[in-house]
Image 1 (tube, rainbow over the protein chains, first blue to last red):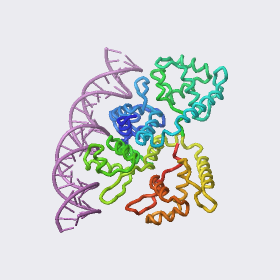
Image 2: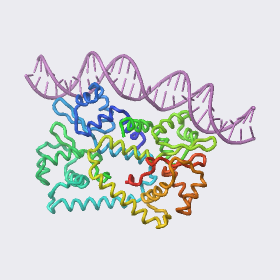
Image 3: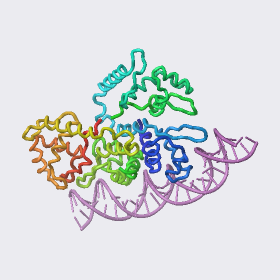
Image 4: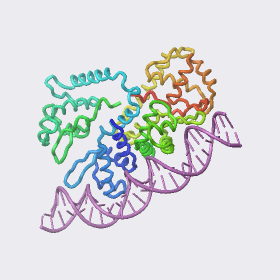
Length: 201
Length: 201
DNA sequence: TTATAAATTTAATATTCATCTAATTAGATA
DNA sequence: TATCTAATTAGATGAATATTAAATTTATAA
């Protein structure tokens, strides 16, 4: 990552109103007016800050009728915090043993998949542990076409190939940024914004 | 941590010149004029930015004759990045199993100490792995009085109780922010700025 | 079509802040 | 003491930006 991006990221978080917006959004999606009330500012101010946060890819938006709901972009938030440190300490001690780590990550991944999927490829059950759940979600979602738009019905059918409870799972896809929803139309997010299981502690 | 601190931290990193200063300092300590040359700004500008970084506790300073050397404050840099995320996601998923974690951390700690110290309390050898090394350093340094000023000679004697190579170890103390040096006088840093082993990966 | 509700844009204001030059301070050395 | 060097302060300038009220856009509902 380059200097400008890191600066932009920190600029985005260098304002109390924006941080408070993010705190509210961490509790779930909110629309502009609600944010304006809770923060005691005008809607125009929210629009202004939302633009800044959007530029830094820290939030997502979804339109429903007249109102636009904002939500947190988990992946970028966590990812950028790390990227900033990497820029400052580039290679200071972070690169050692990196090739081994890749192997180990891949081993973990395939072991989880072997354990939670039947040999026919259906999901036995949804893992309770977040890390494992993300591996499972990523594995399923990687069978969708990127760039293509899906109707809600299509998504439900797709998920049912793997698991009965398509409603819950569909919500998980959105929540962990694997997909994006706009007016009932679903689309895959680019992989770099997916919640990454190997980032978690 | 409260809102203001998080905002202040991000404000401090929301400027390209300051990020570039930190990058330079990650390569070792530098004085004001050197920084000014490398960044193509006047010394006055460096003073200005150094003040901002100091307010956010991101750098340390040491005076030698006429010139002041700046260096990175590792601990605060990494710690604040995490604290910011914690503020936004407070309790969202971070608190679960926290009591178990404390126990586990303590177990790790005492196992490392048992392994690297003789029963007389001397250090067998310095661990190669950073995590373990920090546990060892913290254990030794915790036998110094906080708030008291030590001459270099005293520090050397103190370290020799544990290990022969006092020069190397003294440098490690400084490098990992356990101690602070000014004109040959040493003093313990407050524990919250010590490099924390359980923060690493 | 008209009315309504939410969001955005516009324009204005006030504040913050990065940077410079010039003057000053603090410490070291001769 | 006088002098040199590094750093800081003071003041000025220009750019960025947080906020608001008012006007405008966009999409829904009647």
